[in-house]
Length: 273
Image 1 (cartoon, helix red, strand yellow):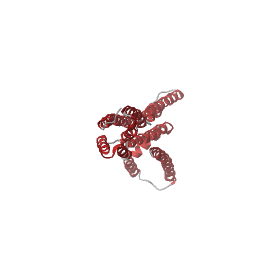
Image 2: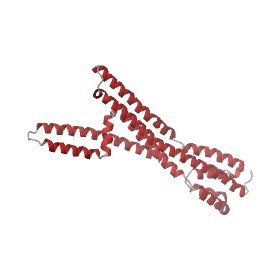
Image 3: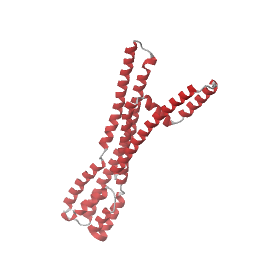
Image 4: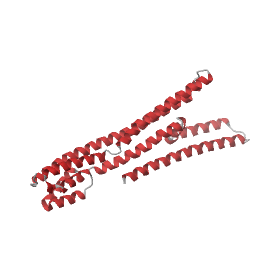
């Protein structure tokens, strides 16, 4: 289920990315067509009115965050910005998948312990196992594995709980390495755009034989935009990564405390070593 959700989010992001690029190309084509038609038209034009309309249109466009981001994406050179955007889409997809999985894995351990103890009192081991089967989360799975081997003695139950707890901890941490990869990769791609943009600026200086602000502004703008974009992507993904780490630590602590409480309950019900 989680893999399908991750794939759906990633594909949706890719489709949105493709649609944005098509929209950019279409906007550029429409603008070029409009300019040609305006040049071919012969009627006199009020220059002052046109200036006011252009200023109003520019102000209206400036209010749109999407338009601003699209403009910066184009100015930063899509050849580099595309890779940064892909890191953001894939990183967010994996982060959201982990957030959903971890929240679904959160269990009210106190309530579960009460139910297990009541089941042991009223129906024995099988009733307690049924409670664990009907409860979602790694804590219930650990309880079930321990109860399933309760006939073999308390020592076996303790080893089973510890071993299966390690398995559940590994499942909780699954996918975090990919998120950390995108956190490191996004700034690297941004810095690569920075270096290449500066190289382009120095190439322009070498060809012209003169240092002019207008001459090197394009390369420097690409360098700065790609760097900022990579850092922003890394910061966004870092927030999700730290949230996942904190959530995993909380779940593991609950697992350990609940496992100790389960052993105490089994001892209370005279389970022998």
